[in-house]
Amino acid sequence: MKLDEANALSAAASPSTPDEAPLLTRGQALTTKRPDGVTITPAHTGIEVADERLGVQIMPLADGRLALQVIAYPAATGFKEACGLLQTDARRDFAPEAVRLEGSELVCLGSSPWAGAAALREGFVLQLTAPMASALAPWLPRLVRVAEAAHPIAQRVEAHLKPSPSAHGVGVCVDLVSAILLDGWSVEEALDTIGRHHWTMNDPAWRAALGASDVRQLLDAVAQRPLDATRAVESDDSPRPAA
Image (cartoon, rainbow, N blue to C red; front, side, top):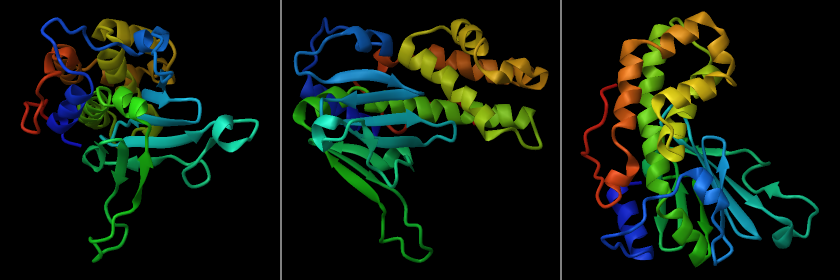
């Protein structure tokens, strides 16, 4: 999804004013009661936007993609518990540009799984209520940026841990970026808090990789570009950290 398009949709849903309040952190969104009944809650590295019937989880990944899951709640299914709707509860992963809001539709279309058949794109379209679409609009470009910022950091960490680090371990990179960009933590707070709960910090090689000067430089660059500063305009040719 192009970030300038997402921000335009956000502005259309909530007209900007000179004294507009800053974007909420995930913790603030969790404790803020919305009059339309939509809830925004943390979901792993991202968020879940939900009403009483459906929820959509969007979670940035360390490889630069977005993972999505659609949840149906008992009010929609009549079941006793919530259930996932995508292929036996499995998530679906998409490149950021393949996930976009078109009015009240969340359109997620991946590349073709068949060589020579690029015209085929697999994915799904989810019809959201207008309040859910409005709630998701300002968050989608933030989630895209988390994925895009985490990817080069993960690549640097992988380079320090050759031949091959654990894919699960590399996920700590997107945990850190998500804490900085979605929760408002400083780099030091993210490293300290996540480090106390993530197994990678018990491994000297991982601690050294995450503390390497080039990795720290990228983390500092993320923290120096708060998302509030890019609310109005963020284009595809905005400067990004080198990979």
